[in-house]
Picture 1: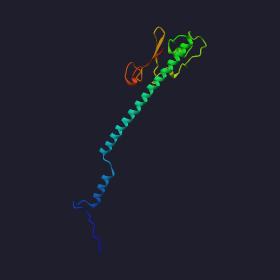
Picture 2 (picture 1 turned 45 degrees about the vertical axis):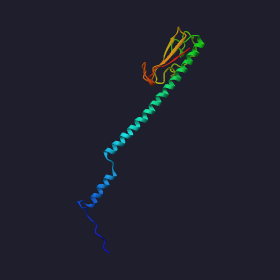
Picture 3 (picture 1 turned 90 degrees about the vertical axis):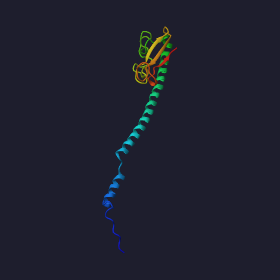
Picture 4 (picture 1 turned 90 degrees about the horizontal axis):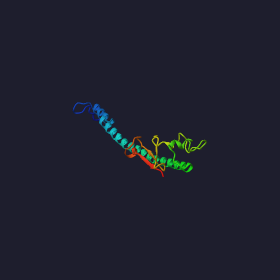
Length: 159
């Protein structure tokens, strides 16, 4: 029995091997458009996820900031109990002065992170009501008055 002869070319005259290799090349690679679509999708997903992660980090800093302000308020209250008056400035909590006298034990170290908000800006401290009350203010993430969200000015008022 004799084998049938193989066709050496297609009807359009293209050699059989050339048609197979051209089809093979098209099936093995991605087009530039396909690659760009995938990159755009990855970029959109990344933007969404990183935005959520960054926003949650800033909200956490805002909560830390509130806790730092409450701790500082307690230290001011402790100063008032010890010396029967509010400190004139926040640095009075970290150094001896004419009210505390020489040889006092400061309530905070001079480089204590409690004197800065969660974004590294110094707290603003004012004595109000003829020396009876105080206000501690943090200017928020942007360090400027006003703003919304984490840029909001955080305030706490003492007794």
